[in-house]
Image (cartoon, rainbow, N blue to C red; front, side, top):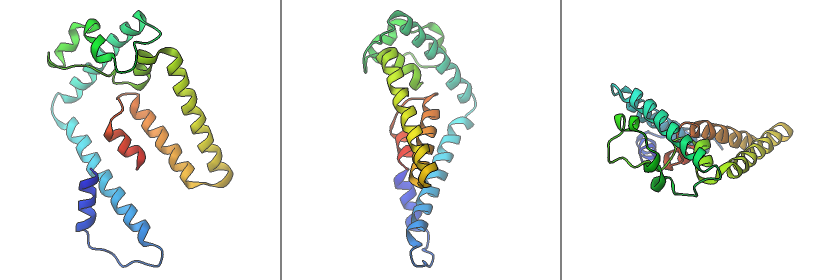
Length: 178
């Protein structure tokens, strides 16, 4: 996406800059280009007939199986162990939505993934830290009108909402750091 956004930026003829306004124009152009391309790629996935339902039903099956794993070992299975342990708990409905060779190594939900790997202690530690970060950003924005704190707040909220239904990866973090 960054490459494509840069390509769009390089092909757009430059506008005349006012003193001190060039950086804002460049940042706006790059951000808009990346956002448009990201939205187009995201929407393409759901325009394929049946893909939306397959994705939702697959996740629901993974979440049911992940809950079974959590009940079996509430203190967590350990970091990066889901791919090794999940096949023991994988239910038949998942094979209706995913190929037999698909390896599930994430719960496709950050809260479930935390419970699954590091248990309730890791879950509450992570979300306590996140809540403190959000509170600090909100206080900095209210007290000083700090725009970067507001951007940090929006990024943290956006990524956290996204991770309720997915898992961390390069695309999620690319949008977070933008």
